[in-house]
Length: 118
Picture 1: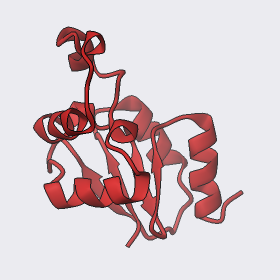
Picture 2 (picture 1 turned 30 degrees about the vertical axis):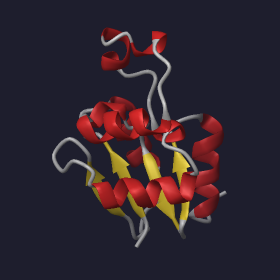
Picture 3 (picture 1 turned 30 degrees about the horizontal axis):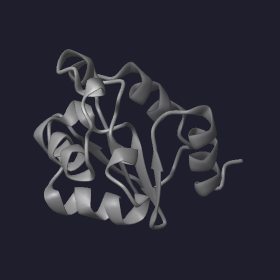
């Protein structure tokens, strides 16, 4: 089943969810209420090719931990994503075994195309 990993308290995620086509079959996974598992992260990694692509450099913790001044490795990105939900770039859609990461306009256009609504 197609899935969205999102944060219920995120205004952008809520806005995106409201804009999704009606009647689609989609499993909703709130990453704060139900943290992502190692298996789920591994599946995302297989589809995306890197942990860095799944990592949010916009997160408040990224700034407060001064991570931008550190040389982070793929294993660091993985560790941080598993440690705290805020490090997952969101939303993450998995549709027909393809992954769409983040909320850029281009990405959301691809998501809508994947749902057959563009």
